Length: 445
Image 1 (tube, rainbow, N blue to C red):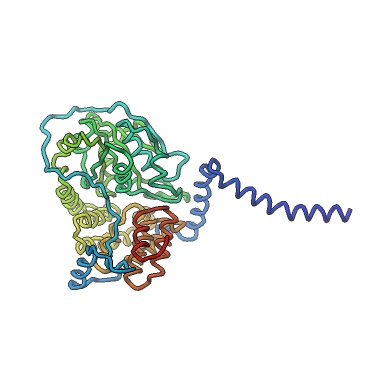
Image 2 (tube, rainbow, N blue to C red):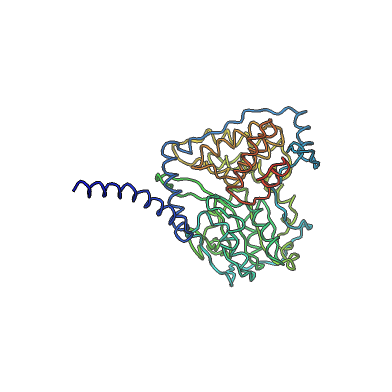
């Protein structure tokens, strides 16, 4: 009996680690991992947020840039020479390679119909995929024009790691220009109901990035970013027809005012995807928005007016949008000041109402550019630290890692910069900005 009992204990001692190893191995099999990874991430996030509520994380800008330093920084930032293994003469390259044409604005005098619902839409959802509203929405925009891929074909390129929380619009534009012959895109800020209606009525559906509110793991109402694909509208009930990849599903009707309310948090940005040979049609339908500079100036004027007329979280979005438009216009000094004001409004928001949009830097990284190009490197680092350490369960935001790396290099922390660039590549393998930064520093990924 003693022998049998001893053998059972030994078998149990050996069997438990074997079962654990088997479970881990099964978890990483693609069919199982795809279904369970988001649940593991959710559990990790629940624990992290319980002990460190992300809506209580506050970034306070600490630096003031002198005028002479600003001039010097601007000259450095746009230098194109690369002298040896240093980033100090290189320009960060996170920017669209395909920002669309810049044709002169024209007007479209032809009245548009009161209602439009574009045919030929192939609906895709994002279910069983983590943070896939972007790949699904842009896939629908491409299949509308005959592309034979789907969300996964696109997602494997722009979002190769399921931990990646967001894909920026420029990354989708790059995918289209590099992988879909005969297709191109145009991105504009400052959009409104009328320009969307003109495009849709002309046969060109629109992808918009906007915010929405949803209860999180603790039951609190939280703000998130979300792509939506617009394929129709109805002036009779003042609604857009939307192919929503998440909660609302296909052919969802969203009132114009509710759409604008969510769109505000992304500076009213939109992307229209179209065949290259239809470019003249798109430019005509865009009207004054055909001119990128005009559109961004329009966005700046809209945000400036809203910063004075709105309050609370919407005032934060307005000030943030002012900074975003100024970054696009390369007015970095003004942008840094605008973001300072935005973060001050943010800090004064009532945390009890759970509406602090702590995920903001997951989706929009304009403050990094504004502070970097005005030599406020410590503010870049501090903002990235707050974003990576206090607003997310894991530091898996490649853009925040990238900009922190650049700022670290400029403050003499070269090894820390290398570590951050490599960490960015673990989140987003083969990501060109991080690869280039490491190449300039003369080290391997």
